[in-house]
Length: 479
Image (cartoon, rainbow, N blue to C red; front, side):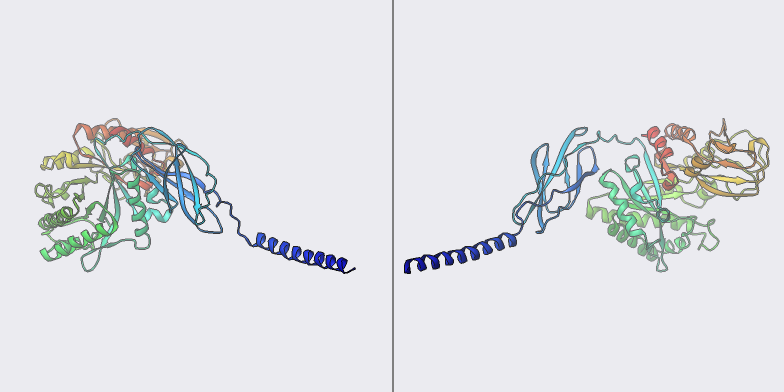
């Protein structure tokens, strides 16, 4: 009887211990964290591809313990690791296909499964430009949704950011402080795609040339202005400075400061800038660019020392557009390449006559960059005669090439005409006249650039051709 009670007691104790152990074991299993690897990285893509490099980016992996690093595999072999979610592989072979995938490793050394595999081909080696292609990016175009990162940098050698202003203390200042810094960042990121691209800050323009005369007035004011330009381009990553003074001595807005001595002071201002840029360039082992945007008229040339200033600048972009526009009494051709024999009720001018004026004034042709407009002028209530050319009109405005192509070309009864001597097109439907540039006229202008041994072409301005119809023509014809 005693033995039976002992066995019963032992059995009861065993059941109790087994229950406690089982509960503890189950609790341990429930409390133990999941020791499987982190989730695989997602959305792996090639963010930037050049002829010798590929920049990968991906979405961060998810895990209950932070991911410590990402393993990068190239062509099924481990290649590198990083703690970031981007990585650039350099020294690749042009026009070659590579495959990549990513794995994540967490702090417990658990490794995820692989991301999706992507296949990326490096581009063909970049072909050097035979001429410069300078595009202006207008700051205000970002207000309407066209940002610097929408520019194709492979088709340009230089981009001028328009515009910076001159403050009351005669220093350069941002023109659009609410958007400029972000635009500067996006603009300079284009150099990841085209490392040869140069970016310049353009100062002044039609609206902000009012203080140039004051800044150029004395050695002290020139020094203040020049040193502020150096500080600005170093801070924001520009490769140079473009002066768009509209205009020395006379012209421009009536509110602008103007002096007869602007003619000499403009040269002295450029000399001071060249001096300061070279000083900084010596420290940085780099050549900083100095350029100007010059007028197309003979009066502009009379108001500058063209034979002196050429030694200080890398090149001049000549504004060979607005040769006719809304200020005229009659419709006319916006930027005719050559003068024609037409009977016209108003003055005549051409790209060719402007270029010849610069060259005849001893400006080096290879430093002269020909301006090409990516916009035109639209005139309403036009007299229905001579296909709308040289006629009176009721009202007029500028219009981008994009809007011309989308809303007028081959629509609403518009007929395209092309001037056999001036080599530019226009549209007319019986009451509305549009003077503009198109691929055919740009092709003639690129031929002209080569024939005259000019330095290249300048575009005003890039947002007016976001689909790059004109830019592609210019690039293909001039490279």
